[in-house]
Image 1 (cartoon, rainbow, N blue to C red):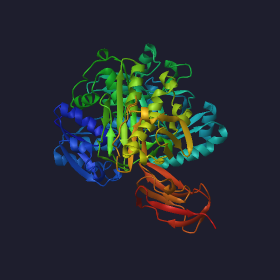
Image 2 (image 1 turned 135 degrees about the horizontal axis):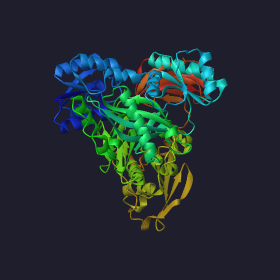
Image 3 (image 1 turned 135 degrees about the vertical axis):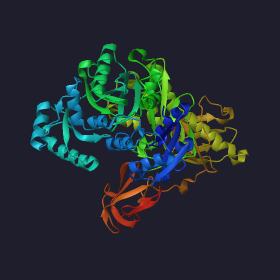
Image 4 (image 1 turned 60 degrees about the vertical axis):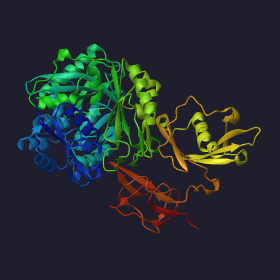
Length: 639
């Protein structure tokens, strides 16, 4: 058995690996960048080594630094987690050549599945069904167009070396093909250094089904059943579950057998995932499920498989890497109940999923669910890495039990001042079509307007705010005069009449909300609603939580002091790096024109002119780091 393990990763997956390693008596070594000097995975490991500056390309993605840390600490093995160097065959080879144990598949297996066209050809030879398409060597625009025409629209253009949703374009008609092809090739060349593409039939009612496979060095390969990862946004998974809804035993047997054949075709060792696309227009059928790709690593969503099988996949990885046979035979594995996982991110769905960074002054995650996290209250969400806060994992006797448990877990999640998508996840879990299992990869896009509409505080929450933030501050009836509270999306006014009526009514942006009127004399502050407080409870403001959303109120705000909208000041919405400045002082700009581009958390965000005007102030330059709230540009209206 491996004695000491270096984890070449960070965040929740590093903490997850440390937990199992410690239970097995394996010593752990963490690596960290400047930004992660006090990170949770660093605090939990037995030893930690600094490997460089905050950007991943200067730390976590530098294989030589990882190997140097292993040598310096006497680590026997390296576990790559997922992301970063986990599917880098050259790094895996370097680890093995250094005399260390690589906790993952052989480099040849990684290479075999790394290029989509070669992987598909290998799957066809192994008898694994693949999506109808073209993956030939002739990459001329004329040949690619002809193949797309022959397949029939819509089609999907995919970068051969793609991943993470990059280098993919849907084409609905022949006249769009040339433009989409050029766009896809440019992105592929920029992201992967390879502009080759393949063409696939685009499935109109797609479900994303994947199968967990595991191989050992003794020639054994098993599957641990399927997961459904159809709830996606921009090709990134949001909620995953196991088993897949609507999967009958015959279809399950067919898809899982195909996954085992795929793994054996590349002599696979360790944890891997075979991903399939299913045409669910007539339900899940074995003849309408096709191979997409293989992920040669542990997946983010592996906990749902662990929950339904009762197996620890990280323990399996360490045992297989140590040369042991698989812990279970295929006939010893079965499905118990249902599991779901939601990815809790530091982002604001109401603002286009804008990433949110900063210190986690307040963080509550229920202890009634399995929480996989790499942060704790008081830690900081950095702009340098993926903005995941935690994975919320639940298990139930059946799908409905798991679904309601997931909705409850999301609803009770509290975080401030960093924004999260908890309320968005709750809406997904509570959506009637999701409850019925009627889902596809286009589900979130189809219902985006409803799912991302800004949450509003309930009447009970507003009553709670009125009771705690206004009335508790008045000792004498003579002080009961009209007051207001400044609410983040508008002004909530509390207007009181003097005794003997002692009644209060609430107003939102000056409009009366008569449903909130109640008799103060009869109101004792007790409601059926559970409200959490204290996240940001200063002398003038407080944060209240409801249904996974955070609502910020400022005490006794003066209406006359409210900042006027449209003053032309453009502030940085988050900490980040300025990647482009498209204007200069004195330039005339039009409403909606992009002025500055800011990059944070792997995403670019354009700041646009709020109205026609002239650039009066400019405090941004390309390459500069800016802090949240800093003034970047000020536009003035012409005389």
